[in-house]
Image 1 (cartoon, helix red, strand yellow):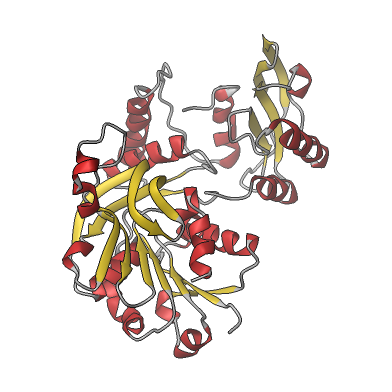
Image 2 (spheres, chains in turn blue, brown; image 1 turned 90 degrees about the horizontal axis):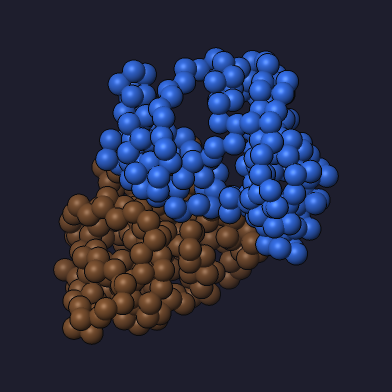
Length: 181
Length: 201
């Protein structure tokens, strides 16, 4: 259900956007992790009086329907503005809007360790497009083929910089834990 | 008449447009079908004259504001070209024909059974549900239910061991005489071909 590579970086991202962050621990067990998500959303409702959740769901009905159910239960709106968007178009719009994004995890053939910390740019789109044709790799990683980290975007008040990282994994599955400044 | 489909947006929140209307626009773009979009309160007589057919899109689980504004949809009763109502759009059609909105929450993928061909869907099909309400169209004489509700009470389905939805909600309906279609599920997620097939009607 959840994105985990370099997950602790959300603290720096929240600082960069100057918005509060709600942190809740989960062991990530299928379905049980949804109670932890519900707990986090309840906390946000109580503490910050939020009226809705905005997700980045594009294709995953597994993720979006579970968040929809939680929001419906808690009586808040659920917004999925990227829902069903063409993935190539989405990545191109991110580049056009000057999102600075790096890959933090790869989890499918034929990826290898060289993809870790690679920037999402025009070259990335070209290569991922070829992998899509050859191996059906989803262009925006919607099948969980890769995970990414935003270092800068129009919402950030300052750029984040990678100052260290640790890579683990083998074969076609690698993940990184990044330190930011 | 050259195709010029009118998409009616019923979303109260602007951000929901991207989730419930934009995906329909993308399907039409991919099929090179000409269209224009109007918010429901801005649909004019001229728009209705220009439109070769109409799709009324759905909206979010908590957005029922359009039901308070049914008067903006009175044109449906006189419109003589094809109309397709998706989820909230289906509620609007049913309400205008005298149906009552009832509560039933269904979210996610469900396998539904179609008693006969419905805009290209037949027998068992996986569809995406996202609704808190429905209208029982079996109570409306003008409409035939193709999927859900009374269709699911057929003995072959009741006794079936296959994982088919036992939904009590009318899921797919058509007016018996007019080209008015409605579906409670969201075709823009799993059944995009429905939109294209509707444009061929």
